[in-house]
Amino acid sequence: MHLFYCDETNLEERAGDFLIYGGLIIDGSTAKEFSAAIDELRTRHGVPRDYRLKFNPGPEGFTHEQFIALKQEVLETAARFGTRLVVYTILHDIAVDPDTARRNGINTVCYHFDCILNRLGGAGLVLIDRFNDEGNAIDAHLRDKFTVGITGLPYSPEMRLTNITGFHYSAIGQSHFPSVVDVALGSLRLAINAHTRETTGLLATANTLLGLLSPMFWRQHDGEPVPELGFQFSPKTIKAPKYKASYQGLKDFLAEAGIVTYQEITDQRTY
Image 1 (cartoon, rainbow, N blue to C red):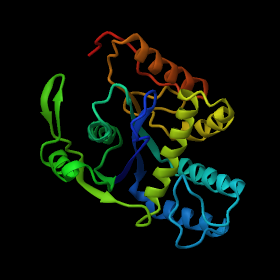
Image 2: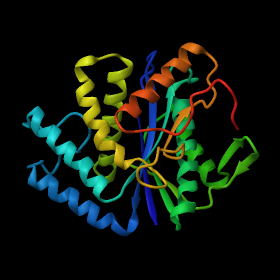
Image 3: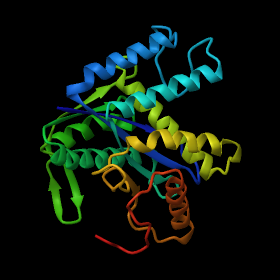
């Protein structure tokens, strides 16, 4: 059994920013040891028991340097246990609205998780970070993911995600794993925003964070570019030159930091 903990970041609608939705694949056979390792590093770093670990803010009384060291070790531990990131991103300027973009992100990463399970073998559970959207549409959306699957694919009206045995909610504090996802996606958000907002003072930090995240992205084989199953830019076809340049700029920025993505940024339909 593989666990897939999911969350979003950069949800606030802002021109030039990318909404990010992602999930972390955790091998169920090593989940107990992974959780114990996070327990151990919290104890060693002196993290209060009631502190809910997130990318921000840090524990009360921690210096900036102490908190950075804690988050770095969280990412290093996740990589050591073979966790794998699956990410979807879309420019806010193109997205219909943040809630719709988030639901589309859930569709994409869950479909990709199902595809990855075909390669890994075995079943999977999806655990979505709890949130409230308009009309509480997420409840029906997750029921639809289980009973129907994915609809509107180019070559099939619908496809059941047969490797996934359930779609459930999770929250920080109920397990260490939502915290790990939050730290990973928060790190990715900071790095991407440093690029898109041209915050030059954060670019060195951004490169460090991307270096920590790089080994965590899903790849069929180590050392290869990250396929669309691991990192997807949405939409796949971008007609407006201004937006196409934004996507290409992000793709190039990630590549310079060691996250080479396979997907081509194009204005032509390729599927």
